Amino acid sequence: MLRDRYLDLVKSTLSNELYIELEAQLLLSVMCAAQGSVLPLDDFRAVRADQDLLQQLVEAKRNGDSILLETPIEGRGPAVDGNLRNYTEFSYTMVGRKRLDNLQQCVEDVLSNNVPGDLLEAGVWRGGCCILMRAVLAAHGCNDRTVWVADSFAGLPLSGHSEDAAYAMDASRLPVLAVTQDEVKANFERFDLLDGQVRFLPGWFEESLPACDTGPLAVLRVDCDLYASTTAVLENLYQRVSTGGWVIVDDYGILPPCKQAVDAFRQHNGIGAPLETIDDHGVCWQVR
Image 1 (tube, helix red, strand yellow):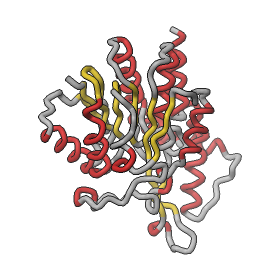
Image 2 (cartoon, rainbow, N blue to C red):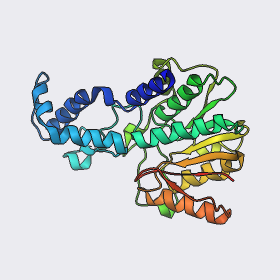
Image 3 (spheres, rainbow, N blue to C red):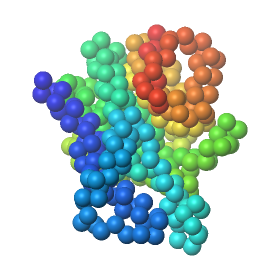
């Protein structure tokens, strides 16, 4: 169907699968620079010959894995003292194809079963998953639901929770995660999907979410990494998810603080709905 082909193209574009050799070229250039050498900009054959690098990128986009490198900061000495850079950052999303497919399936499920409510992602980075949700609504001709885009638009916070102590991922350490609201809006515009069905919720979650006027939610996607942020989202928004709606948690499988927050919230609130594994990273459950 044309609808399926459109949504498949959107997902391929969001994860930059269409230009993977260019991404490999950029990544290889950065790796050379970090080692004090230079890769000629026109040496695309070097990229094509480096099948290990290309395969690593292919798998990263399929599984949503990250490729992390240290890059030097001017005046701070060697690269080991620098910033962490995530070199899936050339995409609109770090979420792999499996989690993009899951998100599409969850949105289509609530549409086909008339589960009331809007769609919200907390922790949006460059907006890729929110763009996909808006694309699914457009593909199905749905004009009565809103996609809510909730983020600090300043990176991750410095958390005071003991569970987060070993996971410093604020903007001073991972500046790539600090994407402004204007940048995310511009990304929506590139897909011709920025309209009245997209609303932004800027600010730290414990401040922005308690009074937000979303109303019922049919899909809640949580991509907050940390214990404090994940807890803030679930405590403020879970009760708004309609019966039959979906809760998706992006980092449950790879970030212990996120898993601890989800497990504690589910246990405290007596949530018995089984967790469904999406891939090595993500899980979801349907609200009963």
